[in-house]
Image (tube, rainbow, N blue to C red):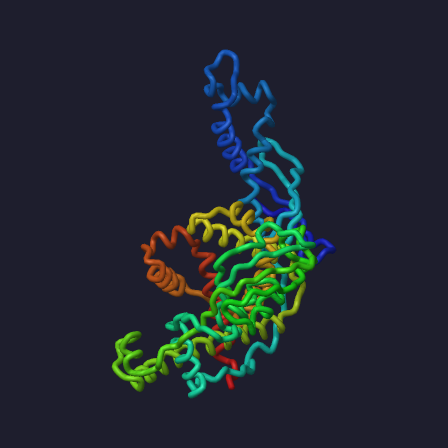
Length: 426
């Protein structure tokens, strides 16, 4: 297989490749197609699947297996041609056979390639790092969060309902004086201030006491899921059965002993302080990485093909589908449940896909400018790390991830490490 011609088209990042496939390679592909298809071919005088290739070619023409054989040759031929032309193909727009015969075949491919990008000023990026100090205020908030998690609801009498309380209600809704489907419930526990009901519903329960019966009026949103209720005025009859409020436990030694292995409040605070400090440090480090990534994307210059964003979004959708399957759900069921189609699912990942593509291109461009090299030892070390992380045998990891692909990942990581090392973190 050889590249005969590589012509850049007027459109950015578009090329026409003229590629030839030698006779020996083409012959092997034709023979493989024959062996696959002969099982389905009936020829008089031969048992089904036993007709010699030359007989079939004599009956149907020497080119009978050409199209399928060419289809089998295209991927490797394009890969070799792209490597020879020193371009990375990101999309194939069209393939057209020019000529074919026993000596091989030639085809034209209209392709979109990875762009050549530019980036400068990536060293010495200034970053504002978040504080990791565990202040008294932060510690108190953490303690309150723990108390909240251990709170219980207690019924209160002769107390007006407030946001944060839970109202136990019977309700029935009416539009134009007629009760509508799904608008009635008994003994419903509604967390006031949660925003789970129609705007204005919860607010009108606030201020009422247990035992009161009253009517509230609301307006359904224009984008409400039930078509027949969109934008309609509604009236709800409410019976407020009970008001429950949160009761927080006292933060004392007894409470600390119940929720931890510590004996005193002071001991627990020290442990909590260490935990919060670790979390704040991790969050600050993650924010530094995000700031660096955003800056690199801003510095990147060049025209990025739409196909790269599409490919990345498609990969992310496939990953999502695999996660769904691991949880016992298929994509079709998920889309029906969520009222979405494939395009809507892909749109969920579009913004993140663009960021991933831009960041990858930025780091690849830096790696090229800095002449970053990846050794065999670097790749082996990465294989070992992945095997340990996934609890897999190294050989199985190698089977799943090609060395060339992993080498590129290591190279961009080295580029990122270089940028982070040179960053000015304040």
